[in-house]
Length: 127
Image (tube, rainbow, N blue to C red; front, side):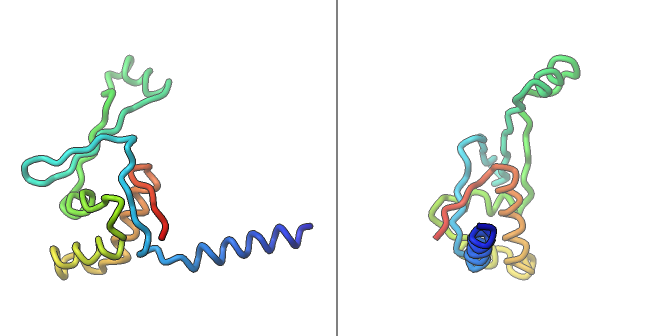
């Protein structure tokens, strides 16, 4: 029985490691509102929910909605996450726009999109 479980886990790990992350298609989560200002800078609005946030809002005058302002690379990348464009294609556009300033392009881009995923700002459509 233990061998069956171990082999299922091993096959799942092998399959996931064979997936090419650059083929993934990120899509922006609808849990957070975001907007772009006139200069092209993206701001993500995060609603502070839960009992601890409620207490902080009442006692410490913390805001109900926090704002996350993205820098120039993030502000360029975030609108490209449309549920149709793969991470590889986003990288091509970033490279064309920023040139050598974006290097090392794909390691930085994949780490950035993984961070967006970890914080719940995006999800993935697998190929």
